[in-house]
Length: 392
Image 1 (cartoon, rainbow, N blue to C red):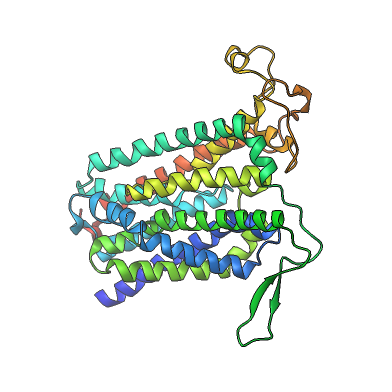
Image 2: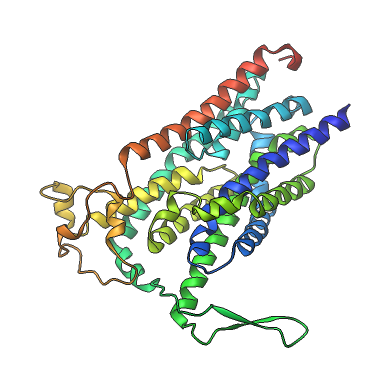
């Protein structure tokens, strides 16, 4: 019976990882595919490789935190309870999808495990407090870092990453030898190569950061139960993510996966870099992080910084006669467009609100990012506390 439950647990775990692969490949490699820098199969392959590398390295820290440290007695992770926890993660994520908001798998997983710990009276409040504090602090850091970049460095970056595609392909494949060798096409210029390398590298960084944080969401309960060792758990999870990247992620790649990829290329690179770096940093500390919330606040900060360029710092503080600050400012620039110095830009060049950033939409995203984990926490607690089969 236990072997049947273990197989069921592994399958449910892989189903969660499968959906992670499908939902995160688009945000990571959507800009690269949209710019015709790489194909969808190449994007899926890169997602699988870099997700696995992130999971195999820093991802272990997060798995350990959720699977062994968040509760003071890991004996509470029976096979039955582990499968139930994964079930609540899946159901809560489904609620987010119904409302059209990509829910945080990390926060949802923590919520479900916390509900289990509360029901059994074994939740480590110190560890939970540490995680919650970083959940609050990390989006604030992302906001301010992006604000500084948007105000003081965005214009320069915009000129550096300008990428005009040539008429021909990026590479030709020399098949004259035994092994096909890619060669730069004669119409491809250095700037095009640099831009392509940048957008693909950012995608790889996002895939790596996803692996460091999200692998725990799929395998931590089983690892915590002691029924599945760390290495095979990561292998199963990485395989499922890769399958998801090659199958259901094709649609997310077509639609660019998330609001991040609807930004101009420069803004997408900044947001992805800031958010991924913070997620990797938190994963090194063993903290499961919400990429979506950090990225949302990074978008707002970047737009705020960009929109206040027409004003000097004292004018921004005073708030006199300045433009309404929105992320629409990010759409004001074409890649490579030269901009005047700070305080000398024409306010009329800042477009009207509503193109990329809507305060109502942002509030809905942030709200659902907290409601979905709350649903997982409450559902897990009530089930484990009052359903007799779990015996808590």
